[in-house]
Image (cartoon, rainbow, N blue to C red; front, side, top):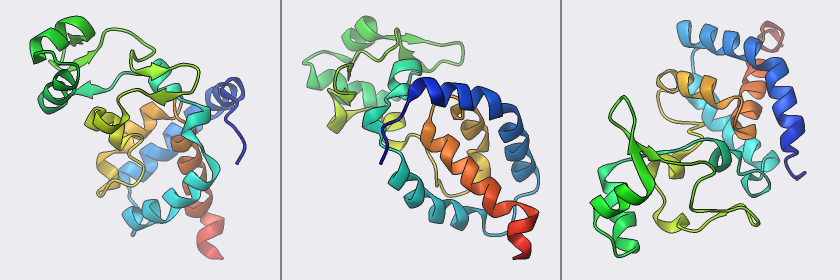
Length: 171
């Protein structure tokens, strides 16, 4: 498995983002039969090609949403109250969600690309990038956002484009 070249990924993503979003919108508006099973089939193939520890772009450039359960669990780990943890690390966005105050994430070790709270990380991080969630159409808007941040999401959409192209369906 090749390490992720983040600069090359960002350039490739910027070049193809528009047509990939158009593709995802078409899939969202007219989901092909077996879409959820297709995502389940593609996901292991993606992970054979993408190693998150050579990237960590999600932790470097995005922030998870922290649930109340996440805040309680992580605060307890640091011997803090949930309010102390929120005051030190989080802010409430316009939608009322708790988010990191800074990026890269305060829990990311920038040298190793590893999470210092991996075992108790937020549920949003644990599920990221949500490749094969049941009811894929409910997550397509998330995949559209993640295309420019996550090589695994990009790779999944690339594979979907090939498998769902009219030529692939004929063969």
